[in-house]
Length: 270
Image (tube, rainbow, N blue to C red; front, side, top):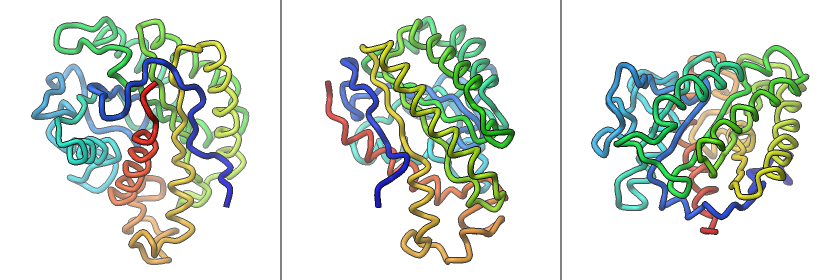
């Protein structure tokens, strides 16, 4: 079945050296990304603690269990038989686009935007990941203004030297126990695709990617048994698939990380 919102290489920029060459991941977003890291309260990430906080951090999955960020760094280390990338994660629960702008402009830029000692990231070895929109789409289906502000924040990253960008679209929250309004989430993903294409057209030296959380969640929800869940888990808050009405379990996050890693690993160096 053809996907409505597939994972996509929007633009293949020259700074991409391959997933296994990444040294830094910089993450912005909301609760699905949050690991409880604070640059004010925790040391900089290191080889021993790549999240900057004791693994798996504090997530919105089950207590003591990793979200996709933790799963991804573990899978990276296992598959590459090397240290995982250092993760600078500025996401926090409840965030909307205006919060992501704050994460980028008021936290990232003064923290490591100027590449201080210990965080001397380069365009070629760093991937900037932004996953936001679930909370914004809960409030309506007209996302033009929000995505304009979203890409103003991405421009800030570009001006700091970022060249590898990955945007994560929103999952089908209408199929979660929260029963969100489907048109709101569809509209976000459509407008994210269009705005990403516009960003790529005006930044031809940038690698611009969209990873489809929409596809991963739909695959799990379409056939829960194939992913190790019972059919009734798909709509159950507080069960093996959803820890509450909105937040997926660590097991679901593991499939997100698996699919994300497969997508990124399949993109050859420029």
